[in-house]
Each structure stands twice: as C-alpha cells, then as structure tokens.
Image (cartoon, rainbow, N blue to C red; front, top):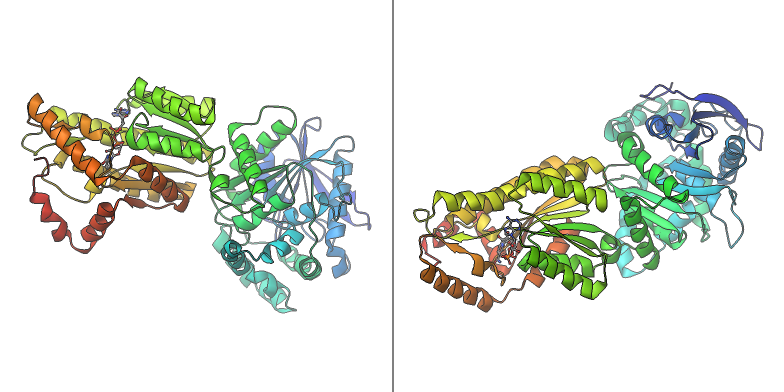
Length: 595
Ligand SMILES: NC(=O)c1ccc[n+]([C@@H]2O[C@H](COP(=O)([O-])OP(=O)(O)OC[C@H]3O[C@@H](n4cnc5c(N)ncnc54)[C@H](O)[C@@H]3O)[C@@H](O)[C@H]2O)c1
C-alpha cells in the first residue's frame, strides 16, 4: 500500500483502457447496491478513498481505481497519454466494466474531478463521453478546466476579487509546467514533505507525483487557452471546502453556469477533506444517491439544492440569496424585539426559522408575521424556557429530527434587571443568570454539539450587549451576565473553529424594544418601577435605534463571521474606548442611569 490508513478490503481486478493500458480497479460492498465510482486526484492513488469507501460500502457497491500512471495502473508511453479525452474514456471503461447495466454515481476529487467534469460535460450541445451512464456526480475540489478558464476571464467589477484570489491560489500550476525542476523537487522528497506537512496527509508516492505532472503539462495549455462552455444535465453536487488552498469556493461554485441541476455544500476544512472528513463526505454521497433513487432529500441536501438553484440564478456568483435561501435558523427570544426581527429578516432572505420563546403568544405572533408575508412552512413556533436545560436539549433534538441541523442558532432570549448591587436580591441574580447566562450556555451546548457533529459548519450568535464591556453601577447583574456571554462566545469560537462553526457575540447598545417594559428595577415598589420603566422606554424611543437595524447587522456579522459585532454608535465607541482606556469607561460607570 502506498499511503493508506485503512486496509483495503475490496476485490481488485484489472480493466483495459481503449488504448490498451491495464487499470487496477477495486470493488467493495454489495454489487447489487447502487454503484458509486470514485476517482482520485493528484498526487494520490485509489487509497485516498479508503475511509469514504469503507463507510459507503455498507449499503453501496463502491468502486475505486488507480488512474493511468498512478498506483498499480500502467502508465502511458508518452505525455499525450494523459490527455483529458483519454482519462474520460478510462472512466467510461471502468463504469462499463463494473456496472454495465445501470448508470453510476460518480464521486471525484481534485484531478479526478477535473477529468470527471470533462467526461460528464459536452461541448456545443454534443453528447458527453459519459452520456446516459451517470446517475449523479459529486465533485470535490476539482473544477472543469474550461470552467476555470472562463472563471478567470470574468470581468465584472464584483468578480475581480474572487478571480484574483483564485489566480493566487493557482500559482503552483505554472510551476508544474516548468521542465525538470518539479521532477527534481519531487525526487528529492522536498515537495512531498511540504505537501504532507502542510496538508496533514501521508507523503505522496514519487511515481504518482512525477507521472501526474503530465496532467498539468498536457491539459492546462490546451483547455485554458481556448475554453468552451462545456455543459451537463447530470445532477451535480459540489462539495466546496472553505479553506481549500488550491480551489476557492468561488471557483468551485462557478460550475452553476454550466450545470443547472446543482447542489452546493460548503464544508469546513482544506483540500484533502476526502481524508480528513471522510464520514461527512460519505454522508453527502449517501444522501445524494438516496435522493436520486427516489427518497425525499435529507434536510441538508434540500438546503444544498436551494443554494445550488440560487447559484444557478445568480450565474454562479455567490450572493446574499445563495447564502440564506433554504437555510434554517433557530432564534430564541424570537417572540419580541430583536429576536422577532431576526426571525423576520432571515425569512425575508429566503430562510426558514424556528421561533423559540417562553411566551407562546409572542412566538405565535412572530410566526404569523412571517407566514402572512411568505406563506406557510417558513416559520415554526416553539415554546421554550432557555433556562431549562432539558427543554433546550429536547428542542435541539426535535429541530434536528424535523428540520435538520440548523445553519444559524441565535441565543438571544434575555431579560434585564436594573438597580444597584445592594438593591439586587439573590433571587433576582439567580433568575437573570439562569436566563441570560445559563440560557446561552444550554443553547451553545446542545445546538453547538449538533452543528459541530454535523460537520458542515454553521454559526452561533449569542446576544450579549454593549453592557458586556461598559461597567455601570445601575446594571451590575445584567452587565455581569452579558460580560460572561461575551467571554463564553470568544472561548467557544476558539473551540468550534476547527469544526468550521463560527461564533459571534452580538453587542447592541440602546435598542427600542419592549425590553424596557419588562425590566425589573431592583429595590423599587410597583409604582416607582412603572415610572422607571416608562422613563426608560421613552429614552430608548428617543434614541430611535430599531430592532430591524439590529437584525440587518446580525445578518452581516454572520456573513462576515465576526467574533464581536457591536451594534449602534454607542456600542462601537464603547468597545473602542474600553480597549484604548479602561479608565475612560469606568468614569461614567459611577452615574446612576436608572433615575
Ligand atoms: N433592547 C436593547 O436595548 C438591548 C441592548 C443590548 C442587548 N439586548 C439583548 O437583546 C436580547 C433581546 O432583547 P430585546 O430587546 O429584543 O427584548 P424583548 O423583551 O423585546 O425580547 C426578549 C424576548 O425573550 C423572551 N424571553 C425572556 N425570557 C425567556 C426565557 N427564559 N426563555 C425564552 N425566551 C425568553 C421574551 O419573552 C421576549 O420575547 C436580550 O438578550 C437583551 O439582553 C437588548
């Protein structure tokens, strides 16, 4: 075995190519199951699929093979033997040998995907090399070369950044086309060592790495020089790792211009997700095969389909619609104020939302607002006290079962207690800590585990407050809970980053919501409390910052994956001041803001 971590458990045989080369082909699983043919990239051999294949073999007929010149397969006698047309014909030969009677599901990575795209697309309305033989195609980190060339020729102002980013990611392809030097770097072990270390993969075999150079040398000049808009009607699923060092997600999803039956899933991780996230990859393929064989699409795949359709409409250019269309959000405290407007905003952007609130009426009203605007099936009520861990755990479980794993979770439910420390009772402390801090902890624990375990990223937003970094003698309990939420969010962000889950602490200043009407003013009788509530409400209304604006800022913070998102001018200035001079923010803290 060249570089595999899992023992091959398959049956191997050879398949003859159209030009007489022997390819090593390995089959696993039940031959009567749906056939998945997986094509490896550069510089790999078929064993790069071992983990994915072992997983899929439980209920599929899984076929992997060594591409010509790689692994145990024979190498062509001249560089011309690496032309894409021959590689596409090889794929056809393998598929005809292993599944003569039924179309196959293709799965391909890197150069495997490049050759598979070539095989499933046709030029100028002509049939493809795989015409009628493909049930589905899952493409990982490898675009059609003609699509690459057309992507790099995009000239709209908004295209400049992604095109430049991709050009920078492609520098090595020029280096590989130099004579002799790449061979020297490979044979010295230098190149393999660097790739193995940076990508955390086993060292590639020298033969694979040297032979595969011809893939670049033969095909890049021919395809990039005179690109054709090669198209396919095959159902395609693009898996785009967000941190791919060679293929940017923008390039991967530009396929939408040429593949109208598209699903797109962004995955956390780099180029070798096929090794590092084999379980997630296998699930993506399994869900796609199931959809193609007549099952209802799994929620994550349905979401990928909405995103794909939005990308097709936008001409393969990601925009706000492609980000939110079909997405699922869970918002706590969504029965009023900021939470309600966040729910409405994500629905306006094309998403679905679980509206969770301790107030059944509040949740129902929000759902009603969304339903009146967008029709049924877009907002779902959930009565929830965030302080009740079992209830939060049950909601996470229910959401996953009924709607799938959310893309966004907003732990927003909160209450306010104002008044001096001396006036605030232990009971008032307990309740605000239960809701504002424990509520967020429960939400992060149960939904965070869901998002991290799912392996397809997502975002958690915790509503803190500018009070998190602005001390005040009149809000000791509230500010303490919000400071804890801010720190918790940053710690969690560090932990969940590897799973591709973003965590944002939202820190609004004064926002005109009903919160003032429910604020507990510690140490006051009912009459004084009512007067204080009215005064606070009037002040917040005068400030005039609406929850709709907060919702818009939250959406932008999610899109930009911000760690801390101050909202309102006072929140921005306060954050800056607290960083530049803590003494500056301690001085106004002595003013009693409740009077
Ligand atoms: N309004 C502001 O000026 C402001 C500023 C900074 C931060 N915040 C924070 O924003 C969040 C939303 O506040 P808002 O201004 O929209 O207030 P709001 O009172 O309008 O909305 C809060 C919602 O949370 C719900 N809720 C309360 N306790 C709950 C519980 N235990 N479980 C589930 N739901 C519960 C309420 O029923 C209500 O629907 C809060 O965390 C608040 O601390 C508000």
